[in-house]
Length: 120
Image (cartoon, rainbow, N blue to C red; front, top):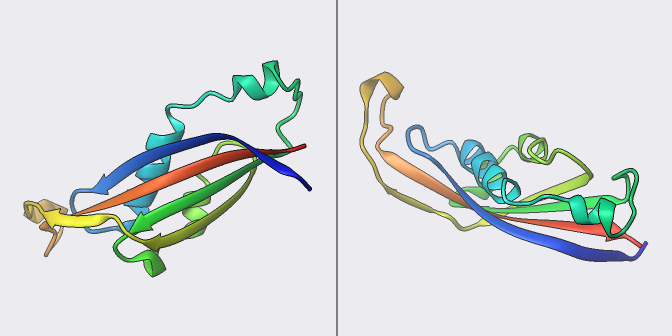
């Protein structure tokens, strides 16, 4: 298999209340893929099916071991998807609102790099 990269998109996401690293990671992936259209794969490469598309998701969060990678992978609408999490992102002081839960005054940020490759 010879993979050739066609798209690399970057995104960021946050969980404003709750410090949920998976939620922030999913939002970062959604942010990245919301700027991409894969029409070139169909119109230029002539792909009728997207079965040769491979999507690699890299997310960076303050607590990478807590990321539910299966949930993150579901953010990609097509392709054979892989995902991994590494140390990164950030936390910032937020505002605790009681109705969102106790001790929720930290904003958690995640970054994502989504790479789309094709098997040629």
